[in-house]
Amino acid sequence: MANRWQIAISAGFLAAVWAGLADVFQLVTWVGFLGCSTFFAQTETGAKGMIMAIMTNLSGVFWGWLIIAGSGVLGSPMISYALTGIVTAFMCLQASHKNFAFIPGTFIGCCITFALNADIAAIIPPLVIGAALGYSMSLLTGLLITLTDNTTESLKDETVEDI
Image (cartoon, rainbow, N blue to C red; front, side, top):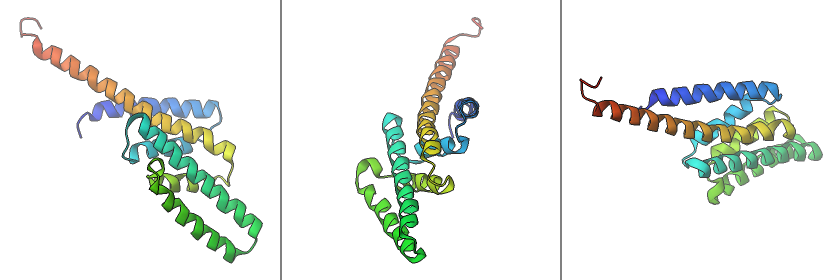
């Protein structure tokens, strides 16, 4: 893997910043890291990738909430199981729309919703920030690659006497 050091520096630095900010603002750190992971796991890059990560994750939050709320209203375990199956089918079908094409992102949002018992206030901010964190890591890595490539090129241009 080319540019491993640049990736490591940007990921490590921004992960530390995120962990500190999450602590200060009492955000669920691991939710942010899942939003970040969604950004890197799907195929789009840049702002488009960030938007896809956010949209798929948040749609999963909605679907998870729907399963939890619907199961609470329906009361019957058998009907809840059927609701889970129906909603899961819709989670997959929504991938027909290009902004929701990354099905694992939807499942990640849904699983987070189950894990945090549909506490939307605890889920949405770190999830969205996490996607932005992934985008930021990508941008910082690109900047570091450009800087190191320019430094390497300028060192190649110098003669032995100049050094």
